[in-house]
Each structure stands twice: as structure tokens, then as C-alpha cells.
Image 1 (cartoon, helix red, strand yellow):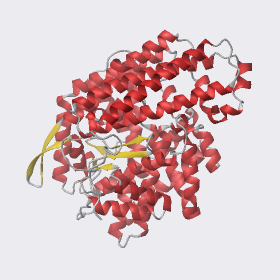
Image 2 (cartoon, rainbow, N blue to C red; image 1 turned 30 degrees about the vertical axis):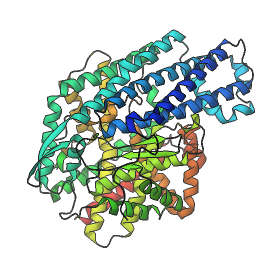
Image 3 (cartoon, rainbow, N blue to C red; image 1 turned 180 degrees about the vertical axis):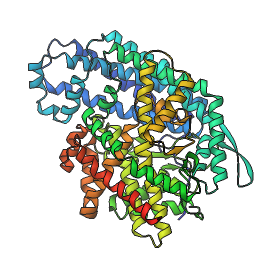
Length: 594
């Protein structure tokens, strides 16, 4: 059956950026925020807090406000991604950012009040039955709140984030979405968006891949000074906040936001560093098959076989639904609903944002997926990845507002798990050695991305922030740091890497989530561990998986994994289980191509 390649935003708020419905929603949101401010002020004025009921009532209000704010934010994000020059949407973005600032100020004041409750009273208070639902998040707020800053200091920081911080992230998105690339494809000169040009990395013709790679590098070079300014301003603001808050380790906040300990992250990276050779060998073997002594960066995403049929969007949808049905009925029905109800924007045209994403609309219990579908298997996997995020949102549908907020490392687990389902179902149906090699290659690309590319991002960002503490970092130095990180993370097995990875990797510019890199590697290895459990239990595992996702917003990740899988993720033994699967893939690829 034919599926729409354009999403339906009107079913959420009719009329786009001129929507009266959306204007009414923003008015409601303003009322919610006013109520929160008054409630927090009243709460702060109490001489003693020894009753859990009013705290629970306030937390319910905060949760509702968060849901309304998320709904508004997602809508405007979708509007700007489909048309970055929508001036009305830009104005709406400014209003929502202001609302977010007010919300954060109110939350900051509440957290300080909670942090200042004397310990004996707190121990009694937190055990109140009315607060059972919020025990984890309240404890987290209390333990991780900086009480050194005054209310005025908290308010000033929140205000400055509007124009002095988040606006740089929005400027980055607008800038890169407006950039055009002129490339010859299949004998025709084409004007493409950055997203369309990036899609050419999997084009079957090496000449096209190479031209796209070098043309993009030239385009980035032309604007490198502007991108360097944006990145320096984002990092500079973040470092000032850390300094005022007494934070010296730039990883402290990312780790807290991901609800994992440094011991867990170090255990994961330790295993990744230990197993570089199998993936370096895979890259070398693939390069040899393509007639080069080492893997050229522009050939990394190249298909392993010469004749790859184009996949139409309708075919992709049918394939995804069919493969999801092997895992469970819930995931299958969810995917059908997403395709049938216009949740996906997949049209291939040049006036679009460069980057795929999944936006959650918690008020209506929906999601929207944005991507550019160019007809390749890589596009299918991108779509599956975003559907995995959307399924996570679906699993959280019945969870209250504040406990819907799950860490990024678990978000990337859900998306990667969806990819694993597709790979496994496809590998079970292979009918030839050539087809198996194609699928193994696509799977191994993801291992390389998570164990080498993401590692290079982590190394780059860690070193960049250390240098940024001493002053502005030039574009020339950013290029050097990027190249050094890539050479180290890839063990020198990638030739002609993108010097400007720091420009086109959007995660460096996400102001809400610093160090958005290690969550991908975490999610990848964690998803492999979960998938091994799914293979053991069959379709009945879907219920367990949904329960794990549902719990992902109300406990640390260490506790989540122990509760649902009985595993200790601070140990390298846990991470080696997932790594063993990936190493076997690399060894099988070498054997099949010998």
C-alpha cells in the first residue's frame, strides 16, 4: 500500500506557524508557568516543610507544565526543520525559549529549597506515601543541586541561556540547513542540501562519493570561522556556568544527565579500546576489496556489492513492519500506526534540515520522525533508528510528566535495538553469500561508528574543552584536534578523514546535552546485550522490554540494568558480552572474503 512521505502536523496543531490552536496552547502554557511560579514562591516561604502532600501536588503541576512545554518545543522544531526560513516559526521559537527559561528558574528555586531541608526532616519527608512516585527524582534534585548560587544567580544564568547560549545552537541549525552543495550526480549537476549531499556517501559510484566528500569539505571550509565562533561560544558559556557552580570536571554534568557513574563509562571505553584490531582488520579488508591499500573515508559507507537495488519508501515501510513482527505484536502494530497516521517526514528535497530526528509529543501521545529518504538501505536503517526512539516514547505514554525524562544513553539503546531487529530478521532470510556479506558489512559499519567514530568525537570534545578553558580555540586548531582524535580512535585505519567532522556533527552544538557522544556507544553495546536476551525468550520478551523502557526515567541506569537484566554495568564483563558479538561479525566478514 502507498504511504505518505510527508508528515501530518495539522493533526497536532492545525495551521502550521500561523496556527490559532497553537497560539491557544501557548496561552495555556503561560498560565501553567504562572501557576508554577506562584506555587514555588509559596512553597519557598514556608518556615518548615514536613508534609509530602503539597510537594506531590507541586510535582504534578511541574510534570504537566513539562508535558505542555515539550509539546510546544517539538512542534516548532518540526516546523523549522521542514522550512528553516519560516519567520513565524522563528518568532515562536524565541517565545518558547523564554518559557523554558522561566520554567528552569522556577525549578532551580524549588531545588534549592529541597536541598536546604535539614537531613533528619528530609529522611522522614521523602518516605511519605504521596511522594513514592517521585522519590528518585526528588532525591536526585536534592543531591545534585548547587546551593552556592543565590536565587538571583540561578535566575541570571537561566536568563542568559535564552540569547547567550541556546540561540547559538539555533543559529547553527539555521546556518547549516540553509547551505547548498552543487554536485554532479549521474551526469546531472544538482543543487543539494547538506543532508542530501551526506546521503551520497552510500552512492554506488565511487566518483560521486569522492566528489561529494571533497565538495562538502570545501563548503565547510568556506564557513569554518563562523562555525568555530559558534562552537567556542557554546563551550565558553557552558564552562562559565561550570566555574560558577564549582564544577571542574566537564564530564560531571553529562554523566549526571545520563544517570551513570564515571566508573561505568570508563568500563565501557576500556573494552572499546581493547578491541580495536578486529575492526581495523575489517576496514583494511574492505579497502583491499575496493582496490585501495587503506580505507578512504569517502568509501566507508559504500555498498560492498556493485548492484544494489533502490528501495522505494513503500517497500521500506513494508519491510520494517514485517521484520518488527518477528520481535513482537506491539512493535509491529506501532510501526503500522506510525506509517498510516503520517508520523514521518521522508520526502527527498533540498529545502530541509540536514539531520534526522524523532520529536516527542507527550501531550497527545505521539511522535514525529524527520529524515530525507534517498532510497538506500542506509536510509532504511536511519528510519528504523528513529522509529526505535518513537517506540520508546510510546512505552512511556502512561508515565507521568517528570518520570518521562529518560537519559540519552537509554534513548540510544532503544533506537539501536530497533536496528538489531532489522539486521537479525534480514540475516535469517539471506539466500546467498553476497547478500550475507552486504548485511554483515552494514552491521559492521555501525560497530565502527560506535567504537571508532563516536570514540573520536568523545576524544575531540574532551580535549577541545580543556583547551577552551584557556581561551578561544581557532578553526585551525579545531581541525588539528579533530584529525588527532580520528587517528587515535581509528588506530590509523581511516584514510582522508573529514577534517571538518567538528562542523557537520550536530551533537557538538546541542546546548541541552553536552557530550552527546558516549550515549551512542553505550546504547549500542547495551542494545546488543538486551537483544541476546530477546533471542533467548522470543516474542514474550517484548513485555519485559516495554517494562524496562517504562522504568528508564525513574532510576539510575545501573539500577535499571540490575533490576531488569541482573547485570552490573560498572564491570568490563558486561560490556565484553556485547563486544564479542561485534567481533564475531568482523571475523566472519574476514572469513567470507578470504
